[in-house]
Amino acid sequence: MSSSKEPYDLYMRGMKLLRAGDPAQAAVLLESAKKQEPAKASIREGLGQAYFNYGRFEEARRSFEEALEVDPANDYAHFGVASSLERLGQFGQAQGHIKLALAMAPDNETYQKLARKFGKKKPR
Image (cartoon, rainbow, N blue to C red; front, side, top):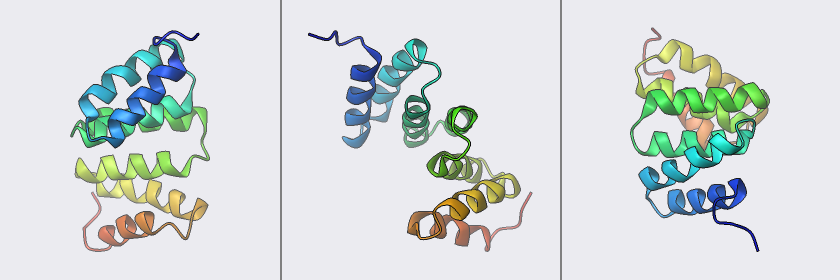
């Protein structure tokens, strides 16, 4: 029987909390999982989602960038970086990441919607 402290269990419980609308508690579990499995892109991505949903956009950006260090072809992590940078008002930097996400998943409507937002804002 597995311990509730194993990284996979922490990750799964964290993602469940995130889906249930509790990003703060999700972040606590995902941070614990990251300490045990620092090279797992999925944990870093989930932690980025939790931080973003909790309004901690700088931490979200860093976590998504860490996921990209492990898996540079992760379109969702590029989207997460772009979304975080957009919330931080760094539109010019965000545009590069959303373009990469769209290049990898051109039919993703969520990515398209964010890209359209940049057409209305001046890069900085």
